Image (cartoon, rainbow, N blue to C red; front, side, top):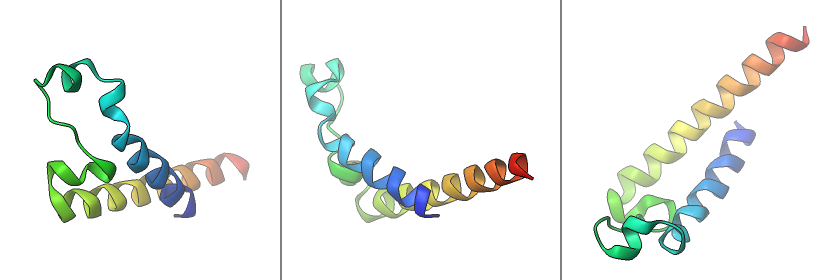
Length: 69
């Protein structure tokens, strides 16, 4: 889960700088998601992103552990 939390922190922070790179956001056809996608769903997007990345961390850890044994 720590791996998932780290991944969530990095991915969430990168969503804040997405307007600098995304052509649709620059042109105004797509709304900027904001840090941790808070502009696209509020606290539900924040918590959903965290939960999804925690599950991702668990799956990666279990998969990696299965190949080690």
